[in-house]
Image (cartoon, rainbow over all chains, first blue to last red; front, side, top):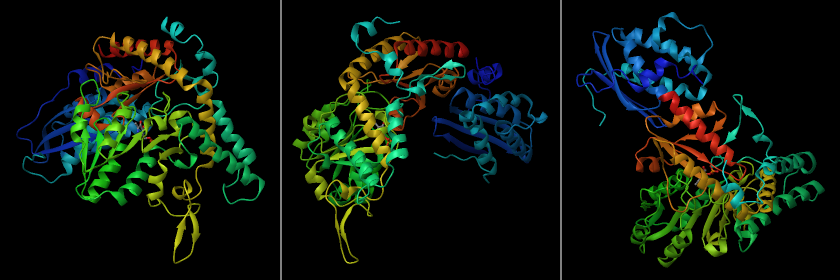
Length: 146
Length: 415
Ligand SMILES: Cc1ncc(COP(=O)(O)O)c(C=O)c1O
């Protein structure tokens, strides 16, 4: 049943999310909130010389949004800021259009099934939207939004 | 299947009733639809759909002021709904019943019209911890505008209002007590008669949000003595975009109009306008005529079934559902008040409501997941969201079984 959406890898990352912790020396952070389902996420990014050297997150969410955040953090490390933002566009395309699946997405292709669940696209993109706001904020110092 | 169904309601033939709801006869993702989202909006019987079609095909005209035949027919049919609503709620006069878009507009009408005129800096408005956003935000806006204070009756872990705390909140500055009759997020039936009596003793007025009560139980406005009572047509098996606000005549007469326009006036000159009598003073512009007529058909339908029989059947269904759900390991009901109506709100350990909702949908089961427009309730129970199965008289014991089986499958996926 619905294995197209809840693939093994998604279930695995939702139950044991990777890089799920705060980061004291993050250079950027941003908060994401999906009022529809109450999903909350705080993203920490460490950018050095335009390279994403570390990413982590904390938050509570559904399986799709948690797995998406987890897999996102794995796929970003080592990418330049520009590459990261490009990946975001490709990921968004994967979820919202019928175009052929891009080769560059790697493991992220498991989210392909979300296409058929329009109500869940927001869950899968929450972490990525948060990433966008983290990467576009011109902040060089660790910030606290508290 | 349950023996409860046979024991409690021998005369309630749910299969026959389901014939009146064509929408229920369909497959979703290859499985028979199990509609457990009536608290969001109820399904409409054919009688309602037919009444709306007949209006458009045979009687369509604007109401009031028309001398021609069609206008007289549409006016009569629309106004007949007001009389039906009067009987449905046991109101004193049909002039106390104002057509609105729904509960939300009913509350906003009172907070705007009554509130702007009567609430002063330092005054207090009392609501409860389990209100729908529509019975929070309009009062918050009013308080902000007027420098008044919003106070909240707390509840316990079962989702029952703390009446001693309520008593303490009441004071000479309390102008309005606005509470829900039945909570949409928890199912709690509040002791509104007592709440109203206590408010009156303190010299305050009352507004009761009847959105979730009217589909499930007899409401007697004269016995309740509420000053305002409002509900939505679409939750009592009628169409969307139509509802009723009840207000006591003296209060309504003393209130300024809500909106200006056609239909709500007696005489208009550029110097001065005099307003129409009740209820028209509050009904500016062409209303939702077709909706009003469909709403009337819905009230007829509910009356024919008998609201007391509906309540008895649903009570048995809720008891069965409560027991069945609590037997699922890791499931926690949110809202376990002793007096409850037709709502089973719950969380499951380690599984987010959104995932439950999607996985149930794939089995044809429609539930609502999220905060149910009651974020403070979610905060109180410290959950981001719940899954809510809400019942109506067209639901069956078999559908509860399907829900339970569906939830077991959800658990399998996440095991
Ligand atoms: C308790 C309660 N109050 C108010 C409302 C708002 O009703 P409407 O959206 O029909 O105006 C609802 C609907 O969900 C409700 O359940």
